Each structure stands twice: as structure tokens, then as C-alpha cells.
Amino acid sequence: MSDLLTTAEYKALAADLDLPRTAFIDGKYRAGHGAAFTTFNPATGLPLAEISGCDATDVDLAVSRAREAFDQGHWAKRAPSQRKEVLIRLCKLITRNRRELAVMESLDSGKPILDCETIDIPETIETLKWHAELIDKIYDQMAPAQEDAVAMILREPIGVVAAILPWNFPLLMMAWKIGPALAAGNSVIVKPAEQTSLTALRLAELAAEAGLPRGVLQVLPGDGPTVGAPLGLHMDVDMVSFTGSTETGRHFLRYAADSNLKKVVLECGGKNPCVVFDDAENLDAVASHVVNAAFWNMGENCSAASRLIVHHAVKEPLLERILARLRDWKTGDPLNPAHHLGALIDAEHCAKVASYLTGSALAGGTAEGPYVQPTVYEISPKDAKAVDEIFGPILSVLTVASNDEAIALANDTHYGLAASVFTANSRNAIRAARDIKAGTVTVNTYGEGSIATPFGGYKQSGFGGRDNGIHAHDQFTEIKTIWIDLTDPADGDNVG
Picture 1: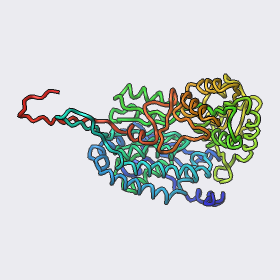
Picture 2: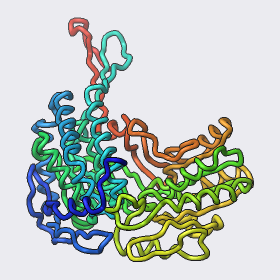
Picture 3: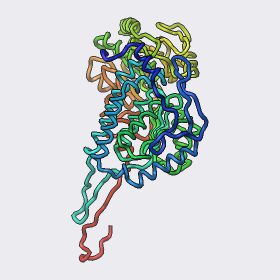
Picture 4: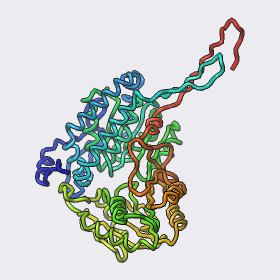
């Protein structure tokens, strides 16, 4: 916190930024063949830069260069320790340019500079470093075989990977994908969200500076129909890794079916429960976790705990503490480090979130321009606010009379990404964690685990794999069996 600058200093940095404006293909910036589009500052509505958009022609070129780089082995066949050295150099370059990236991220996405400086950039570096250090520490296997054979099980890079990014954590989600994909030896083509292309382009430039070979990491700005769909349908893309809405994720499954049956990994939406039992201890701490879970990043977070499911015995004292803590969560100019909440991504999304501001709110309930105040409603389980993924700073409070009712309500959703349980009873905690259908369940805290733990969802929250941990590395590889016959040819024919 002491390392943060003043608002005036951040604005001065913002004014001096040299923003990227073209695609990054085959190791350099070059104009795309698609329509140019404008990226806006969500907080002011003013244009930041005119971006040269890409289309299917650029997709073909990028895929061709990615395949060429992969087949020639400039990266894929490089020694693991050498790949590690390049990614560590990239981490050092990000560290050296961390303030520039933080300001760029805040300007482009509306995220508070507080979060960009203290969460997004440090975790981006940590993610890339973790996967870099993992490269030469993952061992392949020998399988049991008969005396006259050797069976080896190897991981091999899958080939050309398309990474489709969301706009809510542009740089961090890029790191979640390119970290394990590059560590495994793949060539990666990144399609950032059209609202937030800037830091992805800058990161690709830094990666080239760090020594990543041409064609191994490319960035194609543009929208879904002109870049995302051609990547999903491309016959020479081996895998798509997507983070975003469940609706858009379905498209990539269709694209895979209609093309080369490429591997698809989806991390999609969530309507995540925060369950508070009647024996929960230290309600002040619980309130702190609930507020952070619901309102961090303006609720524009797949793992946001937007449903508070609380036992009636502790509801009133907990709500009192939540509302008190909300007074410290100020909303406003993202470049002011005193603000915990910034601007929603664009006018269309802001209007969608604002449409849920109906009824009598316990707190908030108002929207002004790009800002929606952190809002708390006490509602019934069938209310749209308790069912839909709003992706904004709205917390729905649902009251229950028993632990069993709480778990049933927690599971009453099409999603299953994350959940939290607060209880002083370890037996209740373990039972709840096992019974809740979600990819990550935290006990007496809110979070997503760490870079070392897999992250992804049950049901309509995910498909095909997990981000983070060794599991993320594995999903960017193919598993190969090599069976070696040790029979002496002089002993006669050997079959099998």
C-alpha cells in the first residue's frame, strides 16, 4: 500500500503512455486486415486508442506462423531449462514495467488502480513464474510392463493453442493461459476481449524482448465473429482455451464439432454461494470476507459470491456488520487509489447491471454513469437477482433455517464454479464442502485457492479442464504411450 502513487501521479503516467494500436503477429506489430475499432476508457467514456482490428486473413497468417514455429521446434523442442529462462526474463520485464501495465490495465478496463497494482500485476508475475519454474520439474512416467517390454508415458505439447480472454481480468487471465501453454512448449495465439486489448499486446511485445521466438506468442485484437469464430473453426488450431460467459463458451464447442474436433477447455460463469451456518465464529471476519467476495472488481468476477445464504439465527448481526463495512468501499475514479470500486466495463453492461436495481435495497441500489454503488438486497430464492449471473456489485441475501436447506439452496443453480462455507464445526465444514457442487469450496474464507490449486467449474461453469496448478499444464499437452519391445529377434516372432 505504501508503494502506491497519488491520483495526480497516476494521471500523469496515463497521459504519457504509448499505447499499442496494432496486432502482434510473427514477432512484431503489424496492422490487421479487419475494421479498426476504438477502445474506450470506461470511467470517462473517452477514446483511448484506435485499434487495427483483425479478420480471418490475419487468423490464417497467425496460425500459419504459429504452426511453422511449432514444427521447426524453435520453442517446442527447446530444452526445458531454456524455456524456463525465457519466461523468467519475461517476469523480470513485467516487473520492470509493472506500473505502466497497471495504469494501462486500469484505463482500459475501469478496474481500480488499487487492484491493478496490488493484485493483478503481482499475480500475473507469480503465475508466469510458477509455470516457468515447473517446466523442468515435471517428470514423465514408466508404466508396469512384462519383462520383455518397456512402457513410457510422455507429455508432449499439443501444438497451436488459441486463448480467448475475458475483459474482467485481461492481463491475469492471459497469464493463466499462456503460462502453462508456453511452459509446455506450445505456440499460442491470444484473442483479447475487444474492450481490453492493450495489455495483451504490450505483454506480447515484452515476451519477444525476453527471447520468445517469432510466431510462438501472437495477439489478434478484434471481435468474436471476425477473430474468435475463425480461430474456433480453424482446422490447424489444435486447442481453444476460453474464459468468459457460458453462452459464448457453447459456441466453441460447436466450432470444435464443425471443424477438427480440437480440444476445448472452458471456464465460464458462476452464481456462487457464500453459506453461513448458525455456528459461524467472528462475524466481523465473516462480514469482511462476504464484502470482498461480492464486490471485489465491481462484482465483475466469475467467482464472485453473489448469493449470501445465511442461517436466520445469525442473519441480523451479520448484515449489520456487512453494511458497516461497506462504508469503507468507495466507488469512483479508478485512478484514485482510495477507491475500491471503479467503472463497469461499458455502457451496455452497466445498463444490464442497473436493470437489476429494483425493489428496496439494504444498501446502494443506485447507478450513475459508469458507476454502480455496491448494493445489498434481501430476496427470495426465485428472484432473478438470486438466479442470474449479474456480473456486477449486487449481493443477494437468502435466509435459511437449517444446514441442509442451505446446502440445497447453494446447489440450486445451473452453475458450479466456487463456494464458501463459514462454520466453527469441522464436521459440518467438511460435509458441506463435499456436498456443494462446485470446483472450489473455501472454508471460513473467500478465495480461489492459489496458483498451485486447480480452478474451474462443475455443471455449466466449465468444461474440459482446469486452470492453475499442474492440471493447467497437463491440459495443454497430449499424453503419448511408447511401448518398446525388448524381445530378442532370435527368440522368434513376438506378437502383442
